[in-house]
Length: 465
Image 1 (tube, rainbow, N blue to C red):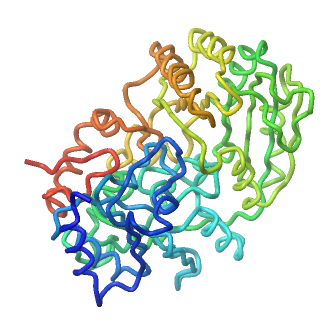
Image 2 (image 1 turned 60 degrees about the vertical axis):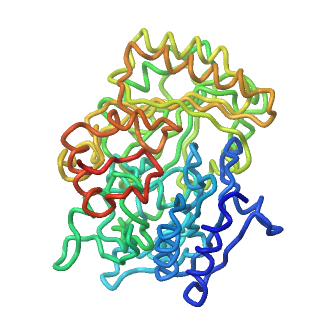
């Protein structure tokens, strides 16, 4: 191996101080250890360090920096770009740090940096509470939270990053600091962690606000592709005036074999509207009925379900080991031209796992003051996410071409800005993710905490000059 001397230096530095486990390319479990959710990612790190504590993380950061090796941080490894694994560098793996427990106040939880959403969901549910998060329970908490965190309840309770109230962080020189708003804590760092990505340190523990929710109303409606113009127009009009407690996403796909889906629809192009009501359950029947049952749907239902059950409903539809490619952006509106583009793209779906997602934003997440967090573009109307996913290597060209064409077809209503958690390997889009004022503040924090760019994964933030 061409960097064997730096690797030896890292291992020597860790000896006697590191209580975790290291995996090298020569070890039997190496190929499994370097895999992430997206099968297109095929990077070969020099060392994978499974950390068990914050002290372990600090030791690995210091060792990698001293050896001048690239460094990446892996929580759940779910990001489509796979930036949690670096070539010929050191991976700080947090998957052994998944403890979750309620804090002394009884309403916030402390969650290890390697937690999956399922870990947090289960613990919060024990007291009839939730942490607003994503929609697939095997997603890593850290990456989702640091980039924003849209999920079933963001319109009611804000993004995941809005609910970060403190964090334990290992900085670029191996120091351990506390991000927060109390005396002795780093308030600027907390601001940056709320949507600024993983550029400022390794978060080994989050403190997260919870909300009193046990059960929610889940509903779904399915429309044939030829009825897409009516279905999407109805979705747009209804969500324009929807209460905050209602979140819903509009998906164009080949109907999957899932509970509630009529057998005769499976494999046919359809438009699905999936909705969750997270407020008072008796008050939710009317808004859910308005969204799901008015229009030419071929199937619709709603049911009361535990929140944790809703959180895992889509896990099998987005498994580890499938090849994925995404193109994503904010949309200013969904008008007739956009609906025509969606219809055309829906008629050219390249496989059973490809889909087009349109998510109406707004609600509580849009009312957070623009300078209160690093997360930007809170006034955007929609997110478009074009998902190409396949299992056979020879499908890659077709799938990626379809995703790019569909994305380009929405130029007429699309913003240049993008949601950081949905971006691929697109470092040139950093200036679209953050407006100038936000980016300058992030640069200043980067210069203070990491002037040498030890953490340069994710959408990169350059230190202020």
